[in-house]
Image (cartoon, rainbow, N blue to C red; front, top):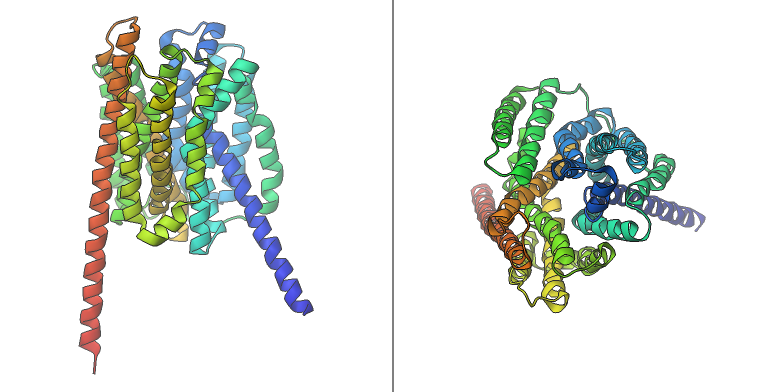
Amino acid sequence: MVRRTTTMQRSVRTDGNKTFALVLILGCQLMMVLDASITTTALPHIQREFAFSAAGLSWVQNAYALAFGGLLLVGARAGDLLGRKRVFLLGVGLFTVASLAAGVAVGAPWLIAARAVQGAAAAFAVPSTLALLVDLYTDPLARGRAIALYSAVIGAGASVGIIVGGLFTDLLSWRWGLLINVPIGIVILILAPRVLHESVKARGRLDIWGALTSTAGMSALVFGFVQAAEVGWSDIYSWASFALAAVMLLAFILIERHAKQPITPLRLFASLERSGAYAGRVLVVGATSAIFYFLSQYLQEVLGLSALETGIAYVPITGMFFAMAYVVGPLQHRFGRPVVLVAALLVALVGVVWLSRIGPGTHYYPDVVLPLLLLGIGQGIAIILLTQSGVAGVAPEDAGAASGLVNVAHQVGGSIGIAILTVVFVAAAPSPSPQRLELIAGFHGVFTGAAVLYSLAVVLGIVILFAGRVAASRLARAELRDAIATAP
């Protein structure tokens, strides 16, 4: 009886530690994901305080995105080699210091430099969060639930950032949107060493040439989209960046094919499910990021909401993202991951098409909030399933690299979506100082373009669904043939 009680107590302590570790991982992930959007509603205030030009102001966001996207693959491999807990703590520590520097910035160059350091720190910490979570939960059901919560945090991060940014900007100062990271980071640094366990380090050393070409290629790719969104697709620097990205990423693939210990094992793309998950994530995140980016402007510039009211307007979709973490498991168990994925993408597509019908008489309720709720249901489920598929069947030594690819797809998707749909917006509202009707035409074009991206994601999901069924059918036939051949 005493032995049974002791075993039960040990099990409770273990489960409690896992839950606490999960809370810390999710808190860190949310802090870093929302920081990419937390300054969205504060940009007019920042521009006035530091006398930013229109082009210079965009780098408050772009500096973070560029460093984050460029270093993600390096950060993921560093966790595999040096230990994910160690790299996680290093990234959180640097991010905390950079957040303090950004929050007390006294000039534009200081703020942009701090934002770049924030992005670099996030590139090392974020891949380790998913890898640590995968290491933490070995039971498939428990891991699925944990990944669902993790994915909900990722999906809701942008909207949470807008909510928090609007709250601080209106009630206190835009600086508090950055300074709030400091106490959160300190708490994580104090508690994480006590509940997180170090991963088994992979033997070897960093693939230097792979690291250099991946960083250069990803940075050039993100910069190209950022520049295109800012000044248009005819800009020579945008196309030069795309050309450099193509050369660097091709070199990266060739290097990885022959490297003994590649920074990103190409075997991760051998699975159609994983490859499709990365591509689908680019489309879904691209569409949703552009919707959030332009919808916040629509709510303020057309409907006349304040920064705080704009943040509050995102509460319903944010709540829906988190709610989906609790329903996706039963749905997946009942119908299977590919079927639920396609259904979720269709629900999101309906929401985006509905949102694209905005006009002069549009009101927040029901013309905006109801489509957002549909988008929250569909996108919330889709992101969870795409995250699960992105790390499905991955060996422990490749968990960091797979996590890095999930986050690369997320980051690149956001950059692509905003860049492409910015061009759509400018084409639909070409006036240097658009009037209300021209603005509405621009927003209508953006949301229609987002619907196109979701339509492509639906097609991709259907391809994955049928390919999976064909593969399962072939496997069943092969097993049947083997059984007949070996029968007495």
